[in-house]
Image 1 (cartoon, rainbow, N blue to C red):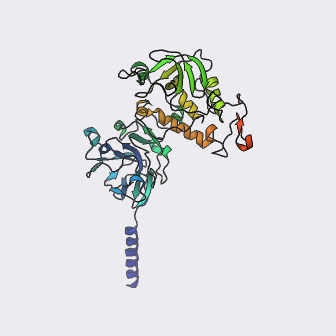
Image 2 (cartoon, rainbow, N blue to C red):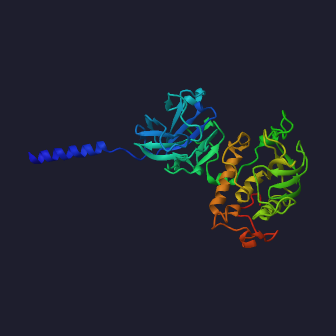
Image 3 (cartoon, rainbow, N blue to C red):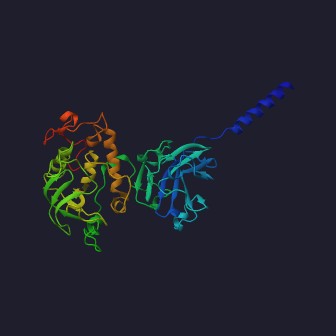
Length: 407
């Protein structure tokens, strides 16, 4: 009898232990975040890359509003996410019925509670498994864009540490990609290849706005090179609405070379060499386009044209940034950024990824001295003038880190 009682107690205790245990891990990831300019149209998509269905009853989405370190609001999920399947969360107030039809969870109390600067976290039984945004920091990491997780969906892995470069910023409200992976730009290799000049900028859009003669229409016109000034300025001949003359490269600010009002800086003559000898040299056989910035002034304060310069369908600005030869590009997307895209990815997204690679590798301006282990400029004597430094040569010995795509 005693043995039977002991066995019964043992079974009961084991059962209680199992009952008290809770699942604290999950393969589920936040796969897409839609942060719309109209908050009621915000949508969150989850994906289950595993080969087993997952019960979501222990899963919550937690929001940290405006830099808060404490959870501001949360959504307790319901239902199941099947193996290799998606789960979409959206508001009852979403204004697109076809999008709402894809919702697996309908948030009934208003718009989803985030607006682009709020960190969000997928948690299981109060344990964080995936994080997007930095808890305690208030910055616009997702406003008016669609964030899609980097990589092929079968390789998605959740992480408790946010890395902005785990997500690709697409144009806003790309709902055609909900519950599928038909978006074309997925991998670092594709991002590092840079954008291409789509035919719509050549065939459909004018160089000069049809409603304001001082602003760009976003169109690109074919032209030829007159001369190259430095890393971010060159001269081109007039064509198709483009006035011709000096073009200041939009998005860029490369280091200076000696001029009437400026003095040389480290990497200035390297940036100039790259533009002259690698991008715009040997023009015969090359196709050069200058593209205006839609809705933005055609010129800047010094009277120079502002534009994007394409060589054989490759964006010069992207290639210069990829070599680490410019100041940091913007972290936020302006209206014109969203009008300049390739396969629904803004040019700025491509440049941000390229710039991050240069930083990781310590190339050019992303190297010494901010990165003590990064490379030093071959045109600069860092020890001259008591450590202030001085120009060493106007003809630096330097070659690009990355291949020239048309060679």
